[in-house]
Structure formats: C-alpha cells, structure tokens
Image 1: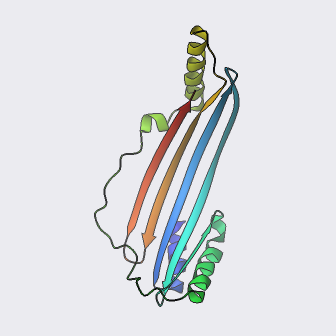
Image 2: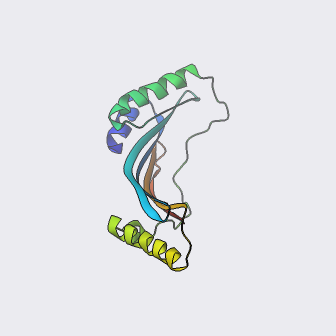
Image 3: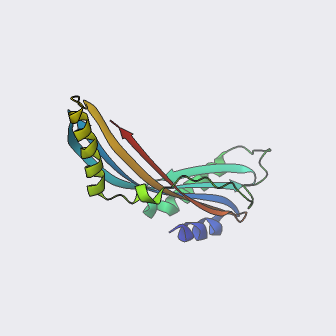
Length: 165
C-alpha cells in the first residue's frame, strides 16, 4: 500500500514524507468483580507532507482507499501556504536509536489467555474478601512506517498493555 502512495506523491512533487500507521486494539472491562464488556478493532491512518518551493502542506486520512485525494489535498495546501524560509529538507537517512517497546509474549496473548488472566485477578480479589468496582485490560499493537524523498524508510512496532484493576 505505501508503495502506491509513494509512487503517486512522487509523480506529483519532488519533496515528500509519507507516514503510515496500522493499529489493533482489544479492550476488556471489569465491573463489579465481573468481566462486563469487550471491544476489539483496528484502525489505519495515512499522513502526507509535501514541500513545493519551500511551501509545506499536510493532509491525513483514515481511509487508505482515498490516498490520492489525501496527497492532492496536501499539495493544494502547500500551494496556498507561505514560504517557510527555514525549511531545508525532510529528515535524511541516518542512525536512529532503537527503542525496545514490543514484548512478543504479551502481544500474542489470545483472547482466552487475557480472559483467564483477568479471571485470576478477580478470583484473587474475592479470596481477599474485596472486589473490583471497575477495571480492565487494554492492549494495542501499532506498526508505523515513514518514507520520504530524502531516502528515509523506517518502520517500528509499538506495543502497550494496561491492566487497571
């Protein structure tokens, strides 16, 4: 998908940056010491920055099928903006620090494993003769990629999990 976006924006202008994000999320709520609700979903997003004669334009969309419209809007915005005399270029390729933010074990928990984990927490609170009024578990796994006209092509996966008993 990102290759199609890059090919299209490259055909329209020389200087650009494309940002793609895909996220999956699961949310399980606990209310009154019981599993009460669950939601699951995914979202994709695209951001495009362009530079035309030192004029910057940006547009974004959550509908990846509309990537051409997104690019065209960024270009229109750039043409309407004033010149940014301080703009030199988008980021150049380089060595960027690696951030460990992904735990494969937790990221790959099945829905059943999450339920068992939360039920164990609930059981332990019952054993302690207490309860959970409200709490839950939330997990999101996001993948990011940035490609620009200067040769940058980086991607990163980010995982977070919150347990709130």
